[in-house]
Image 1 (cartoon, rainbow, N blue to C red):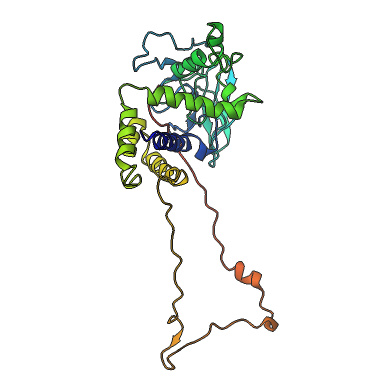
Image 2 (image 1 turned 90 degrees about the vertical axis):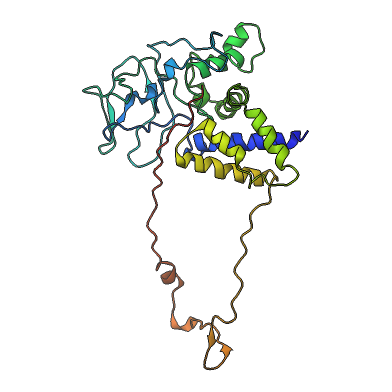
Length: 323
């Protein structure tokens, strides 16, 4: 029952998380955002927010299935997108080398001496597993699952494969760099990640929570007022307060777009006929108008307001610790 509404709410949650992960940054590759002593370590390619991507073993019932990609310390790869705030470091990369940091004041990469990230890494060997795509798929487990179900490993095992020519374990950057299928890969790999990791995770009981939320509100229409579903989802996905706020507001917008809640309409202020009443005459006075013959230049009025440019500096904080 309520299968249409169930699908739409699930899609709204997917889009909301995608916006928080990558869309609001207009990025495909994970941003280098974690600082050490006001510097951006190049070795953040190996992992941020307390994670080591090449050590991300599968959990949630997938242990021992052999999904994980094999780590090759000689693999060399370069990202194609990066953050756009002032002084932001260039795209992440991996290779057989020791690394330093990005000096955001000078706009230079300084590798001598080597500089450690928060995990103590001073190199990028085997560190090609940073986040990519709309869901920022990251880690050897996640890429291994993509290869097992959608990529070359599925084809070699004589199972159906959407991308039989893409080895996500040897070329994880295909999600962002494939010249013809890149945009498609960014979304499809994200959808697979959502379906396989969020919906199927036996420990968060996502589908049961989703069903309860829809069944409770499909008649009353209180999808927006009832915050129980998003409260639970934010607990599952985690993130900074800003991430949680963005995810929640985007979810509410998606509900409006999908017709599950009525859009909020801001009423225009009514004309106040008493605004220009002359207390001595008791009548509304008309607003004086400039005489076109007086040489009033409209451009002068437009230039009277000089708003300073706003710089939106985002921190790119990673979301969630789900494989």
